[in-house]
Amino acid sequence: MTLALALLAASIAIAILLALPVNEATLSPASRLRAERLFLSKLNDAERKCWARTRKLTIVGSSGGEYTLTPYEAFNIRAGGDAYCLRVLGRMPAYDKLLAQRLLVESDERRFLAVANRREIGA
Image (cartoon, rainbow, N blue to C red):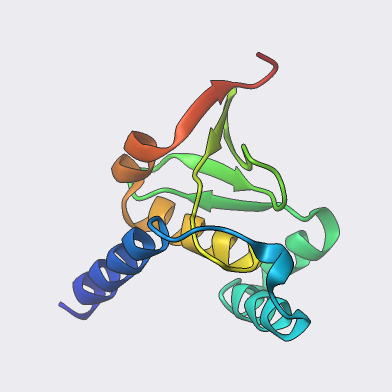
């Protein structure tokens, strides 16, 4: 029951974020630092080491798909030969965007695939 409520809360938060405009340039350095700390706090030791080395994070979706997240590009979620763009709207740091994307893929992969823009890599 608690996990179901947490996933519901995460889905609602993501839906709200999808409705807000983006402008990271106006965020304070403190906001960006807090977002980075929060993002890193949600990684396990192996993920943190990989992120520090490569700036990539491999995650598994709720339906079993494997995805790689990278920061600072529109189509920043990769799987197989596809790249996905999931625009998380709102005035937020890039690390908050990454965390929101991770939560959606891991909690509701079908929804992610339904709303994300997809393109073939190299196309």
